[in-house]
Image 1 (tube, rainbow, N blue to C red):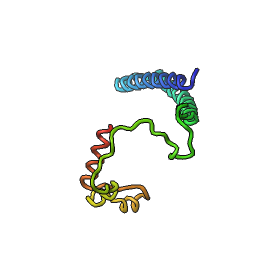
Image 2: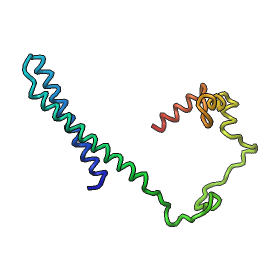
Image 3: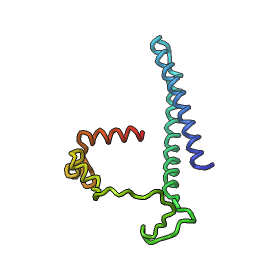
Image 4: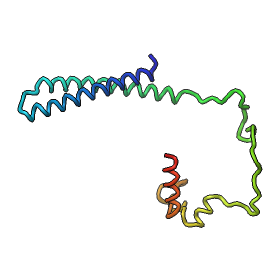
Length: 151
């Protein structure tokens, strides 16, 4: 059986046993509230717990194997992609439209954001290291809006 199929099977079995254990736990609670003997149900719940733990360990091993095999699989490019030493060997297949003439030299986003007071790269680097940024005011609102849009 393929590892991912085995993982699905084990996961389904574990979830089913957990549902049974929850039902038995509820039954034990009702029996104890009505001051009846719940020894049989408690023993059954203990057996189910042991079985669940055993299956979860096996599931963890299988999930680890699935993750390892997916990390080891290569993401090979299509045969039509030419091999090259670096990005200068890239081939442009299609181009749409012409870049517009803005009449001025455009600035990078970090300069614009710092000038507007919505991005602070120095503060981000001080807090958590290089390549981090702190968002202020409208920058924070824009970042949150983009996250919500993506979600």
